[in-house]
Image 1 (spheres, rainbow, N blue to C red):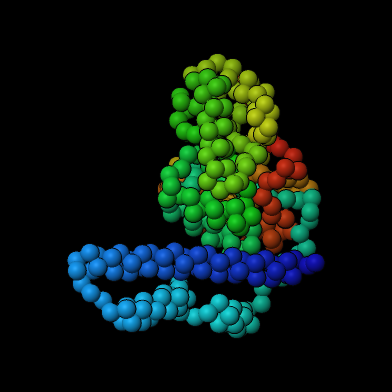
Image 2: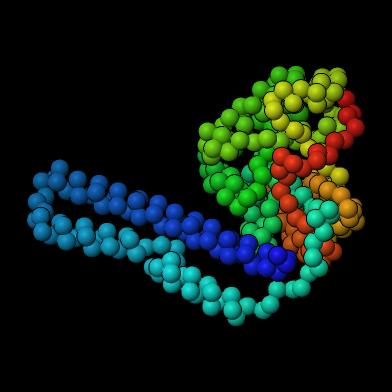
Length: 314
């Protein structure tokens, strides 16, 4: 299968996933509206308002029909939406012609510190538009972020663990403090989504030296104990340097990444999706374009990926 055929297939899969998300959203909306109708009817009964059976039945049927036709696509059926999308696709300009990707030259896009309300969603949009899968190393999340995690999993992205709490003092006060947090977050993710995380990334990477301020030698011990959890840790060999601050020019981030990419190896790229990383979003499309133009393959980390490990700094 050529790269163009693969992209077309992935775009069709992306459209199907989008339609499923729209349908789920419409069903949630319909359920909420129907609940309102039932509560209103119940209140009317309790208030002594008599509603004729025929009238109530007819009204409920009309409301239910209206709800059934309510979705995020203007009331159109899925078949109509599919037909219109197919028409739009036929009118779209042809995809740019890229060289066949080299299976031995891989780019693993990885994002730390999310999920965040805006940045993670925008990154997922760019990835979906380009049919690229990536890896997200997450910290603890609130319930309103759960749809983002569900979307990652549905889109074929990998979800790994970063830390329960990114605070270095909290993370690295002891081995148990960090590993217990990893297990807690891993179990929470599994209970919420059914997804079992198999990889992690230490805050600051295994080579960090800030941990010596809280516990001397802890990284040496942690890197040896990760296997006890049945997990593998991943550092990186390409650094976007977006961790240096918010607002780093997107052109700088693109140069930082593309200048470190090398053919014939796994390139694990460090980026972040915390709030404030707007320029990371802005740089992402150019990084993907460069990779495609230069024959790289994009993948999410999986169990067969050879991990990149730094020299342990503490």
